Image: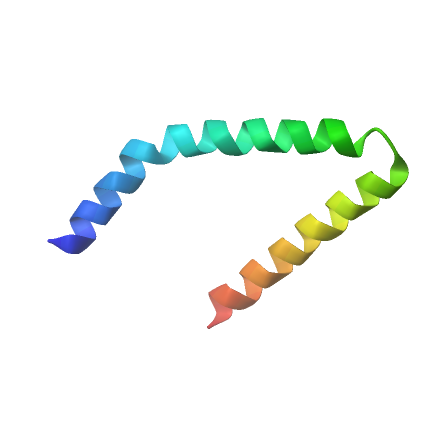
Length: 59
């Protein structure tokens, strides 16, 4: 039913989503490497995201 369809959609779109993520990450990294403040901002942003995701998984 619905769960199978959503799972199938995830499998079909996984590579495209990964390519998009990789592209955005590369741009963010290149921008961040221009100066230490931007690099620190990116690190903080990613750490915040990771910690947020971890707490979501615990629920």
